[in-house]
Amino acid sequence: MPKIISPMVCFTITPNEYACLASHLKARHTAYRNGDQYAIIAEDDAIITNDIDWNLLMSTAPADWDILQLHTCCIPPHLNRTSLSLHNSDEVLWVQTPSIIPSAAFYIVSRAGMYKALHRFIGEDFDKPWDQIKQLDLTPSSVSCHADITLFDNMHRYICTQSFVSTE
Image 1 (cartoon, rainbow, N blue to C red):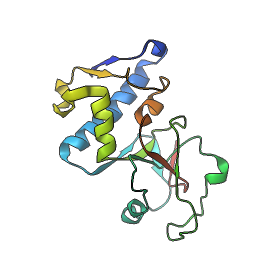
Image 2 (image 1 turned 45 degrees about the horizontal axis):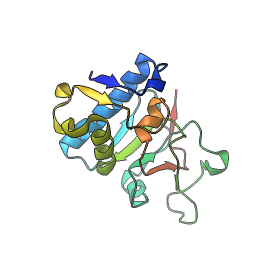
Image 3 (image 1 turned 180 degrees about the vertical axis):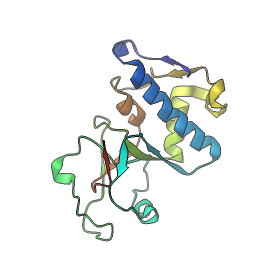
Image 4 (image 1 turned 30 degrees about the vertical axis):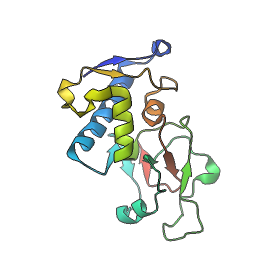
């Protein structure tokens, strides 16, 4: 794992959070180097609870998205509509959100979103193979030390108001 350089305020971040953050960046790095236009990143306890028409879901995404978050532990209750149909254009499916709402349990990251995070935290070396990356520099992050929030910092992030995913 690359050495992590964190802001001084992050002295309480645990090794598990560092590992989680690094694994998500590694997944983005792999997808970016593979030339993927987007990547679905899921933690091991994520459960897809409804059938998803991926092509239809992606066609509903806002044009400027970097992150489409399909799970969060903190979505405002008035936005969580488990009965929402992707075919009903009167319902709001995506809500843009600031970085303070966590959960990296299940999200989709665009190629532009991959680039933003990799360039920001790895720098010019982001195009090297993962095992040649020496460090992840988290000091450019403008948010707290929470790994999930750091992953979404400075991104055009949208939370899906329909429940597709839960966690154990």
